[in-house]
Image (cartoon, rainbow, N blue to C red; front, side):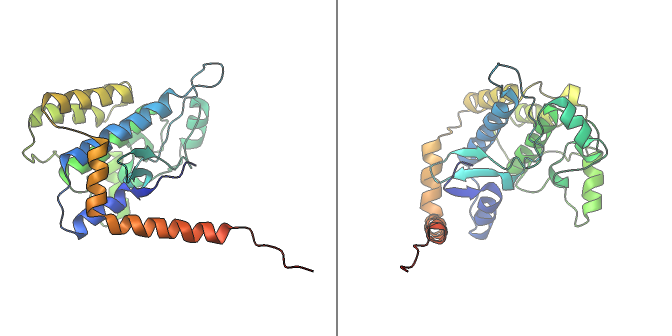
Length: 243
């Protein structure tokens, strides 16, 4: 897997909270746009003959979204991803794989899923970034599982963003209980978000996000680099002792 020098989104959000920093809009929408770009690439992947691979990630969550110190957003951990509809149906029916807090209703119920399940999960991540809290909140995993299966989506808090109603419509379409009522493709979802950002004069820049992370989390950058050096040192081949 490609090495990404940075931190996962879950860790970054913890650092924002720990240091009393508000999450800037340029960061929020850089992550959302990058996440949707990654999911779109997954869904559009084709083989050497140009045939769709039918990939579905199935495990999109803040812990599987990496943000580099240059502001790049990468999707990782394809441990339970499925290729082709037949594999998805045979391996998901009756079996629940993934994190309850980030499941589509059909995934939580162990039903057949397709790429629209990932679109719903992206909607959950977007909802949480905009709301500043978890969407399904309960200390009991069984209750979280129940809420996910029933698609009990709370109202998105109005945080004073411009055109809240327009943003709510975009997000609401991703979080429809019925897959057929969601965005047809992650790219359509992404383009709607980009259009909303441009119409409302929000500047999203990878360079600015990278600079922000460097300015506020420089010590974390150093620790990541030290850890990488330690790992590389441990992996270095051991020279054979002379006979």
